[in-house]
Figure (cartoon, helix red, strand yellow):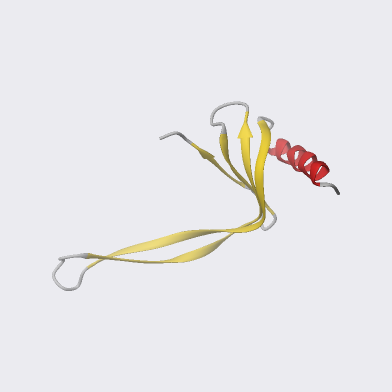
Length: 96
């Protein structure tokens, strides 16, 4: 499949999830989403400092990541088309 045909196909697939997607800027063929679980504990030496501990945990989200544009706000974000679970992951960028 040519790169142009693949782009058209991917856009069609993404629009099944969000009809407002108008453009794919770029994509990453494979990514895995992790979350960081952090624990907060008091410093055992009198409370002068706080100790933060934690670890990364793999989620069930993995697949192709697309950087997208939509026709309405929020306009830009990323879309992880999940191969590892039942729901995809979308994170829109907000001006802050």
